[in-house]
Amino acid sequence: MTAAVLSLAPVEQEVTSESEVVAPDLPWVTLVWNDPVNLMTYVTWVFESYFGYPRSKAEKLMMDVHLKGRAVVSNGPRESMERDAEALQGYGLWATFEKDS
Image 1 (cartoon, rainbow, N blue to C red):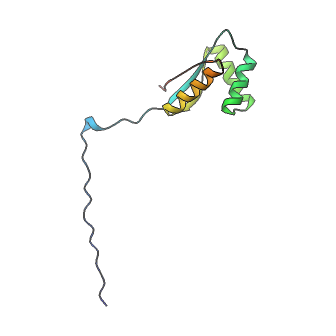
Image 2: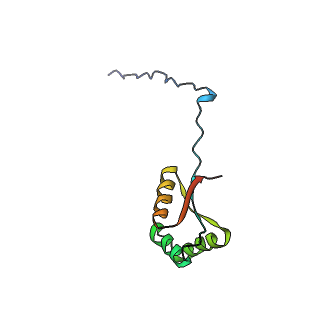
Image 3: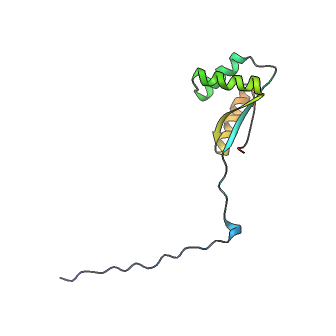
């Protein structure tokens, strides 16, 4: 009985120059800004309805919007933050998205 010996060929790896290295995409955030139109109870309801946040978290975020002028309400990849901002605008809130700093 003869045992078969397998030989593996070395794997070649591509060498990339420093200019080809892509930095990871930083997380993005969705911001809701204070406005003179929407009631605090409505903003709380939107956060509960759209994001599924518990009332305590929704109220805390609403108070940040009211007292600080804005609040980060979600974070993640750009496409998700764009979708969240558009949805919140559909509810009549002033929402934007940007790269997290």
